Amino acid sequence: MMSRSAAHQIAIRDLKSIDDLTQLKALEKEVWGMADEDTLPLTLAIALKTAGNIFVGAFETAKDSKNKDKEKMVGFAFGFLGREHGLTTLHSHMLAVLDQYRHLDLGLRLKQAQRERAMGMGIHEMTWTYDPLQSRNAHFNFAKLGVVSDTYKVDFYGPETSSVLHRNGTDRLWVRWILDSRRVRDRLSGKNVNSRTETLDGLRLLAPLVRFDPSGKPARANLADSLARQRVSIEIPGDILEVERTDMSLAREWREATRWAFREALKAGFVVAEFCRSIRGQQGPGAYLLQQASVTDLIPEA
Ligand SMILES: CC(C)(COP(=O)(O)OP(=O)(O)OC[C@H]1O[C@@H](n2cnc3c(N)ncnc32)[C@H](O)[C@@H]1OP(=O)(O)O)[C@@H](O)C(=O)NCCC(=O)NCCS
Image (cartoon, rainbow, N blue to C red):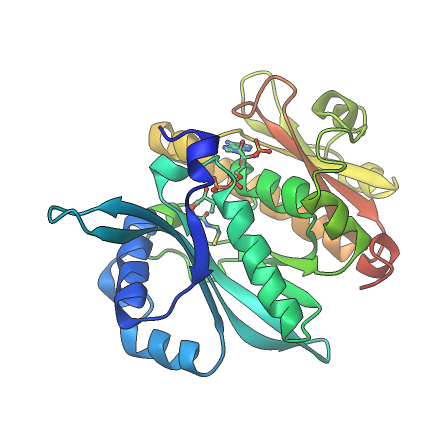
């Protein structure tokens, strides 16, 4: 496994050539385990890039067999322009880092590069979707980047795709990243990530809408009681992919229960504001914090 200091040698740059875009497609297949027909067609990638959409990659340089420097793509982010609530946004469709290069801040550096480029184009907001049962993405998106969400999409890409990450349906939280907000600037500068007062134990006091029962299954709370509060939480497993591998029906129970909780809470006027991973370590259970508020209450610049 690469060290954090060695990871600093990995360069983040715009994709330039057809070879870069071919590497992106290969990486997409490796990370999501996708069939060819579900990956971004090369011709479309070329057109999207040429028309001004944002493609950034993380490149490691190593010597090839002829002792020449060769760049290998180990991560990328790709976003296209969108139009949401009357504003031009960047919709970040894909972010990926190869397994053996993860947890070295490369995902963070790719998002920072996307943000700089989007802001340079006069864009104030980025959006993207992710599976709310994925604890690592939840921590990455809410704690490290400072997104918020007020929208839940049921089976966004259909009931399943060829991707190994889409075996338990394709429900998604649609997240909003308000690029020049104080919240985002604070998170990117490392403030507030570990110093927030909420902990998983603290969130338990909020009587979670969904929580682990003693046997490790999701238990639902009384809806009316929970929604009468200002803040509610929703617990999720620390590693849903492992649950999918070992007990698919339990993974489906988590999908059903959390889908119910997010949809009911968002319908009742809550927004998803934070995610706290377990104080017992990153692989333990985590919990979302939802507040009775609008996105503009949480982020006045929105
Ligand atoms: C999401 C992804 C791009 C993140 O890349 P990365 O380079 O590992 O990102 P970073 O190192 O900047 O941050 C990862 C964070 O997740 C944390 N993490 C890892 N596993 C975790 C888990 N099971 N629960 C909670 N947090 C977890 C890491 O500790 C790290 O946080 P920290 O720096 O505060 O400790 C990468 O995991 C990936 O390619 N996933 C598969 C594709 C995907 O889900 N893409 C995004 C949705 S389109």
